[in-house]
Length: 213
Image 1 (cartoon, rainbow, N blue to C red):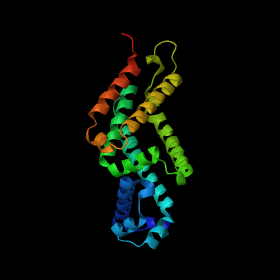
Image 2 (cartoon, helix red, strand yellow):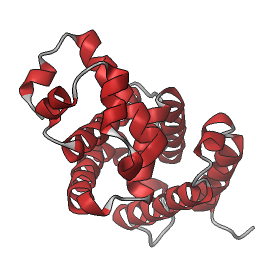
Image 3 (tube, rainbow, N blue to C red):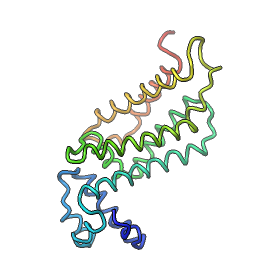
Image 4 (cartoon, rainbow, N blue to C red):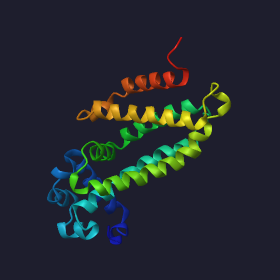
C-alpha cells in the first residue's frame, strides 16, 4: 500500500475503505469489480491502484484491517473483564466475537469468505497473514485467557498445558463447524445468535465438567 493513502483526510480514507469492504464482503475476491469500487468511491482506477498497487494488494489490506478491528474490539475489552474463571472468560470471548461481527458485518464477511473460499491467486499471502494474526492472538491469549487456568483447579493427573491444548482444540473445531454450518447463511448467524450461544454453553459445560453423571 502506498503511504499516500494513509495521509488522506480520515473521512475520505474511511469512505474508500467502507466502499471496498462492502464490495468484497458481498461478492468475494474473484467477483469484485474494481471498476464498480472506483465508481462508488468516487475515485479513478489509476488512483486506486496508486494507493494499493493492484486488486490483490487492496484485498490483503482489507483483510488486515478486518483482523485488526476484531483484535482491538475483543482483546481491549478482555483487559477490562472482571471475571476470573477461565471457562467464563472463554465464553465471554466467543460472545465478544459475535458482538463485534454484528457491529462490523462487512469485515466479518471479508474474513469469513477469505477463510472458507480462499482465493487461489493469493492463497500463500493469506496463509502468511493468518499465521501472523494467529501468533498475535496466542500472545494475547497467554495474558488474558491462559493465565486464568490454575493447576489447583484441575483434577488429579491433568496439567495446565494439556488442558489448554485440549480446550483450544475443541473450541477451534467448534468455530470451524459453525462456519461450515452457516456458510452462505452468515446473516442468519449474525441476526439470530441464540442457537449458537446455547451450543457454546453446552460445549463449555462438557469441557468443564465432563460427560459422566
